[in-house]
Image 1 (cartoon, helix red, strand yellow):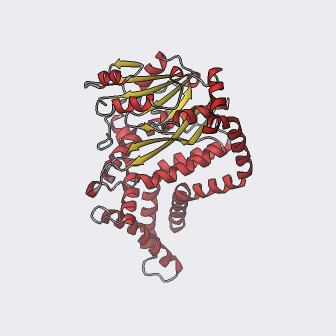
Image 2 (cartoon, one colour):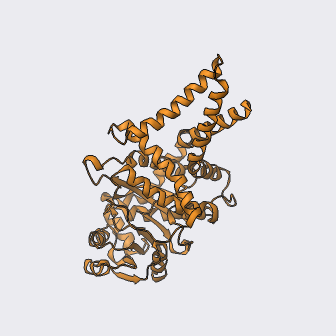
Image 3 (cartoon, rainbow, N blue to C red):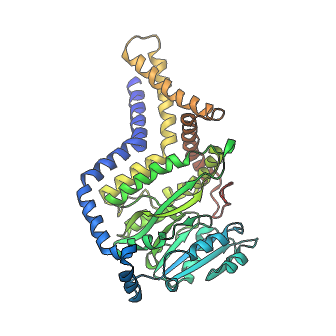
Length: 411
């Protein structure tokens, strides 16, 4: 009995540490070992696109005149986004990309406000007024309407840097690339008591992992704020399965690469509070579990060993973290009870590990009242980890709708 409990505890603890910290360290080591080759590849890429910089404007103009840049449809799916859609369309039209090669499409998903009218007034090339079917079906309709070589996607509240589209599209110079996502930087929309979300700290770590994955193989997930795919590579997925997770691994299964372009920058407001972030992640995870169990993520066919390890480490084990924590805590409590009254290293060791686990929970609880950064990070970790399990419960209990509302404070 004791041996079985010890095995359960240490396996769970090891898997948690691996998916949260060890995997990132392993990626960093692997990327460092292959750094020489990566640096050479980057230098070659810079040489090829050197004329795209400010010092190569004449050469860039010559290439554009020859039609070297692909046509792009920038698709913005929107549901009741009248507050931000005009600014988003203006941002799209201000991108450093030839206007004759760029089409701005706003796909209104059952909008009941003035989103469509404001998008037209702001200069959108195409405005589709669609029945409510969810973001994915709105994007499908926009892609079907488009005839551009590249289809790029953005959220209505995401603002791109002027060079973001050019940099994102540049990834498709490699014929192996089927999907590319940029970097979204979250900005705090509020100050004072509401501004407790620590998503920014987590997201910076996540972006570092994504950069290493892209260098070594392909990324395991993207983001909805800034991404693109070749039109012929676009995948029609179940409307409850978002592109962020379903596109990258499906591209790999189809023999394409899914890459991260960190220089292609977008900015988006984060949810102000940790509690609001927990609700957002709970909603997202209800969609994610559908992809895990029904969308093919668990099937290793088409992955290759390296990418399969990435999916297991960064996705599957990360999503299982709340259950690993529960098993670790339960087995630790049982071990402390079994060792009660005994002297020796075993009793002391499991007392310490239990104290550490309880300290994390206590710090998270205190983070609701005391705004110290360490306590807020503990609270963020505990609540967002719990949201993974809550999302599974929601999906198993009543499924998940294809549509959803914007998170509070992000507009």
